[in-house]
Length: 481
Ligand code: ADP
Ligand code: ASP
Ligand code: MG
Image (cartoon, rainbow, N blue to C red; front, top):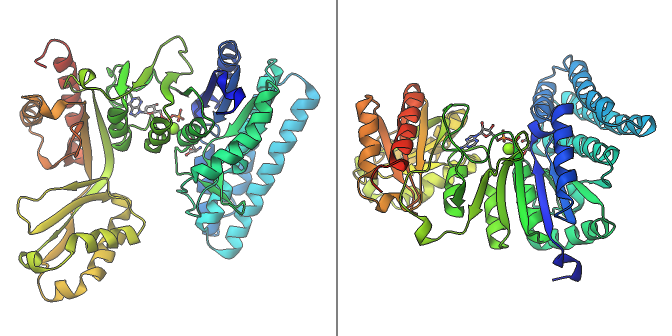
């Protein structure tokens, strides 16, 4: 490990709401300022200002459909949102003008890209990444200038210089070895000067330098990657809630912070829809032995959630949280002749994968005469078509009788290490739903003993979520363990 790595190193990631207004960004600046005393090597990763990535992508899609009249308004919104923060947080007039100009150039780039899409009549994944990346490219300039205005020496850095990825636009995968080499080469000199690099979340670039993105919500992942390759001692994810909670506080108002979660638990929670952490963040961080914490920019005194190593004595078998993935459909492939058809599952999932759709859940059918899995409702039509094409012969011969989808469903997942081994918990889950007349359409148990997923009709989702959350409270306060 290089000599300078012996100094405590912290990667802090700030989400869109943490930089979305002048008040929020000044809170972020204060957190960075305060952390410098304990962390001589500090790396900041930031998202775009809240709402900006959506605005950029919506504009791109509309442009590709020939609707360019809204571009003027989008440009204005981008300019006024960023400029308002610059006006409030950067006192030095020359510096403020400079930052606004840089952001103005990026807005012009946005406009040019969208107009090119309008001419071509299409928005390719590569072009969409070029547009989506602009939000973070704007926010790093603003945040680093705001930090400097507060006396923190900072430097904006584009992650296209650091994170090397494959060419899977909109969902790129990093090459950690190449990323480590570049990250150290670019960041170490900045850190050695005592400056704080302010790095764009969400982005990377192919080895040839073409901009890619790591998937929506991917700034958390950027922080995990940088923390792993430097390596840092800790990665802290600053967001707008008090850490990871027993449910999404927007859906369950009495949700409570979970002070400690194991890596397996958080992985399951993130995978099954807890937006508070991007699921891909966890892997690089565990592999590199880096600490992970989730905390609240707007309540920095709160300890938030600390991630801890998986260990038997921590797995007390209680339910810790419940998550929801909404807007799903369950697809079933069924037929009495299926037993005789070779490789049905492999071919089915191959057909689904060919549409670029990911499958969040597969359920075990009671007989071996059907395969059932969930896909996002938005991909349903495309997936059914791909399956019908893949099994055209079997359908014609009636080895497969039909391929069909439910109406919209929600996948609810209860998470807690050791839960499934604990007698009575699964029973309580089902009776809580039964008492409220919620019909469970399908069940899946993770291969780990950390979660149970239930599929319910979309119209039952909130009732079921509340019922399962009450169970957490009862189980954890005096219920049987
Ligand atoms: P950021 O912009 O900081 O990345 P996100 O909006 O991506 O923030 O994630 C934070 C949001 O995640 C919270 O505002 C909350 O509504 C949602 N969320 C969903 N499930 C959970 C959970 N179990 N605990 C905490 N927050 C959750
Ligand atoms: N700005 C990106 C998005 O909205 C990445 C992130 O916020 O994590 O998806
Ligand atoms: Mg996020």
